[in-house]
Image (cartoon, rainbow, N blue to C red; front, side):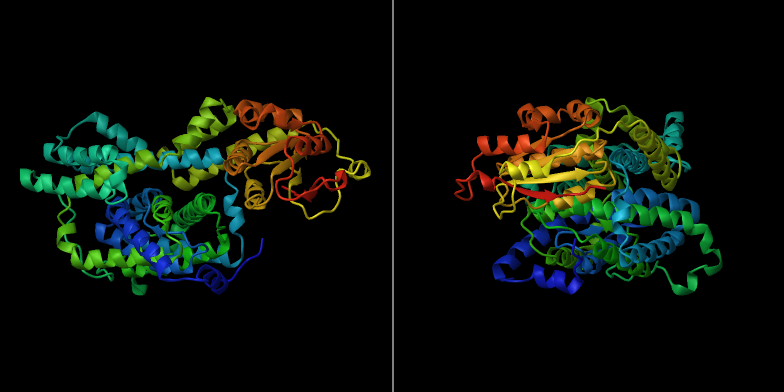
Length: 568
């Protein structure tokens, strides 16, 4: 795929920009700011820093990373996943180490982007990502129990040990704190979706819980002073960097860089499906790298692209990266004008926001899909990664999940049976079924190589644009195996085509791949009538069932176009 420079991305993005589009961006930016404000405050606290640090992070990342981003829709800031790593780093090495590892991770991410190695970050299987995300959700939830209960208990090396400590007792919950947290949770769960477009449930919960707490006179600890500046007193200084001891921070640096890169590219993948605009991965990593190098010197914490905020921007009609910049300016105005009010928000209210966020951040559709279809290797990988995340270092969790998936994959390859059959194109041409022609009515794609987590990115990119195609035939003869990520890629393609009234057909699917498709239920969705022994049979069926709606072709010598695709 063509790599565009930042200037080319800006030029393409703002071609034909006018006042009407600006109004859309303005409204979307303000809406995103309303969603981002409570999350920025909460994730700042959850990172082991302060609410002010979270707000500074959201302001700077929205402006710097948004301006340099590889797509118009990416909105970055402090996130739940990142805070789960940062709280551990802060507790083990101190807050200063959080800033230093943030800068080091930024340099690493920047280097990956400059060297155009972004695609290798995507080589993480879907069950590992789901298990890692769920583990992080547990860490965030457990990490907020103290604030929710209004108590201070002893620290622990992991979320699992911390949870065990709570069962041992030895503390007395503060009723006011618990009630404050419950108000936020109830409002977020039951806030009408119609009102959510005007005032997000998280923001409404914070406001109402804070008012209730003040009126009732509950003894609840609050955020405290919010400085009216983006240059915090507590920040990283060059003179404070322990140059001789940086080797001790290599492991946490790798954790932050890996999570930052993966989360940003995952956010881009989700947003790309929603908008049809491709994320330029390497440019996005460059933006994330620059942002994370700069932010700690202002007192902020490491940032990454946030799926929730990005999705809000898209749903609100945002068109360009000005949405991110406007959201940043709105947060800056909030910090300057509303600092005294924000400082009185109870920590228990922020705990309620984070607990609901932790519950919602789990990839529930992917988890249900995996367990309902009983993909044993996927389930085992998911559970092992989840348990490793809440009991071990997060870097170790990713490595364990990745190694487990690699072992399963190697085992599948070692036991593969490859049926050496191929489509005779000369015979098809002799029958007048396939010749060179510009009519895009029927498109045939010949796939070769395993369709698994490492190749789904190529698969998705190749089929991102099917405009004008009525029937897409996938010749699967050269696909020896498929995993859950490959199944999900096929499912996404089917859903994309189904929405547009297009038809997906599969030909030459070998028995092992077909078993996975049947277990997933894709054969029923696609329709058993759309599976064929060979591509020529599929072409004939496509022409008989679905006459070309785009052009008037009366001769059999113009019945399709072949497009070779390699997924390796």
